Image 1 (cartoon, rainbow, N blue to C red):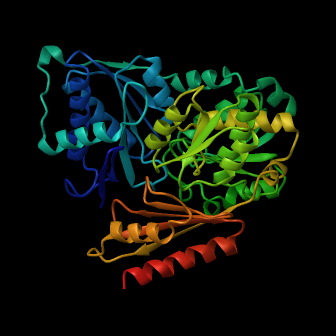
Image 2: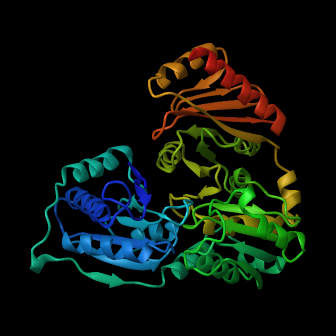
Image 3: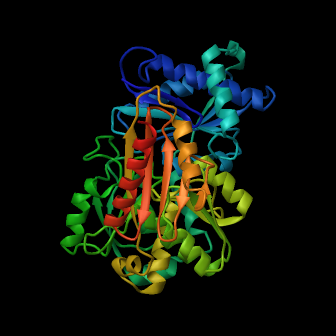
Length: 462
C-alpha cells in the first residue's frame, strides 16, 4: 500500500488501512482540505468546483466521495464524468469555476488513483498553495456547511466534445489539410478516457480510417499504461502490418502523447514536443520552454526559428511558470506533454494530435521521415540508490563545483551542459536515490556519460 502526498495532489493505492493507501477516509480528508483551501482563497463566498475522472475501476467510488465531501462543505460541484485531464482543465475556465479536481493517477497501474488539484485558471496548484492544502489536511481544519447551505451538483456530460471543438478552432489546427491527407491512424488508449477523446478528435479532423486498440473506457489496462516503447508492442505490430499511416498512444488521463511511425518504430516521446514546436514556431515566431530533463533537440529547433529556449525545473507547474515569464508560444515536457498557450496552460494530447497531424499533412512526409529530419539524441535514464544517512545535497554541490567550468544549472538538482551532451542529477523527493539523466548523440555515448558520472558520485560518497 502507498500514499504519496505532494503539492500537485494526493495519490495512492486503493484499499488497506487508513493513511497507508488511498482509503475512503483519506479521499474525504484531502477533498475537504482542498475545498477548505478554495473557500478561504475566495474569502468564504459560495464557490464552484469542477470534478472529472479517468476510467479507472476505482473512479466511480472515489468520485462519489469527493463530490459528497465538497457538497458537505457548501461547494457547488460541476460533475463532468469521464474526462481527460486537459478536458477537466478546460472545463474549469469554461464554467468560470473556482477550481477543479481530476481523479486520475495518470500513468500509474490500475490499483492507483489520485486527486489532482486545480486553481481557478484550470492550472495545477503552485508550491505555496499545495503546501497550504497539505497543512489543512494535517490539522483536519475543516468547517462543514449547515443543512440549508449544502452545495449542489450539476451534471454536464458533453465536455469532451466541447474540448474537441475548441481544439478544432485553433488557428494552427488545419482541418482541411488533415482531411485532404486522408490519413489512416491507429490509436492505443489503454482502455481509459482517451478511447472516447482521441477517436472522436480524429473523426472530427476528417480522419475516416481509425484503427482502435483498447479504446473501451473500462479501466482494465491491457498493458502497463505508461506509453513507453516496451509497452507498445501491440500498436507497433499494427503499424508493421501496414494497417495505418501512424499511431497515437495516450496514457490513462490523456495529457501525454506518444507517436508510432508507419513502420512500427517509435517517433519518441521526447520528439512529440519537438515536432509540434517546429510547426508552431514556423507559423508563430517566439520562444519555448521544457524541463531540464528534456531533449536538447527542442533548443536546436527553437534556435533554428530564431527563438529563445529556456529550461525549467521538473514538474508541469514549473514549466508553466517559466513559459509565462519567457512568453513561450509552446512548451512542455519530454514525456509527450504538449503545453500550447493559445489553447491553455496544461499538457494536452488532443492539442498535440491537432498540431502534429496539421504539420504532417502540410509537409507530406511519412512520420518516420519527419522524425529523421530532427537532430538525433538519445537519453539514458539511471539512478543511484543511497543509504539514508548520505547528504544528497552535499553530493550535488560537490558535483557542481567539479564541473564549474562547464555550463551548470542548479535550479533543480544539477544539470551540466557539455558541448555535445548533458547530464542532469536530481534527488528524489520520496526515496534515497539520485536520478541521473544523460543525453548524447547515441545510446552508447549517453550510457558512457552516465557511467562516468555515477563512478564520480560513488567516489564522493565513499
